[in-house]
Image 1 (cartoon, rainbow, N blue to C red):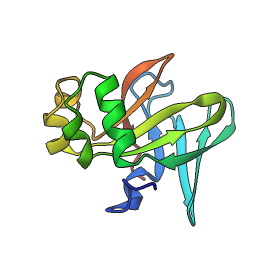
Image 2: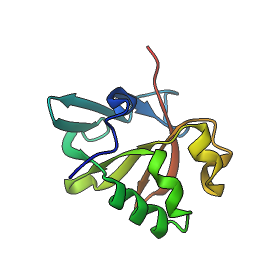
Image 3: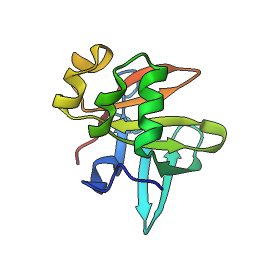
Image 4: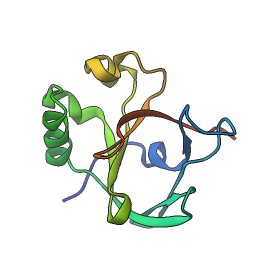
Length: 127
């Protein structure tokens, strides 16, 4: 069973960037949802991967892996990105972020994690 984005499914849809792009605010990822299918376009390689919402148990396991209080994962919304670019893109509002020391000082409600690059604050591009 997959849940986690049902409260506000649009929180994870859109274009995302981070502070290390040139030119500034260049899209790094575009997340689209069509029906129950989630896709993530990686702009650098122009490749698309499937993604799926992370359920409650999956979020708790990820929080534990990161040494964060697993009980605080319930309020986050995350997508697990499959394939070559395996990673996780999450939305955690200010209340959820405040409970996690690694996220508490972030100015954005979004973060990305993969094993190669680690944890990175990202932001949604507003148009």
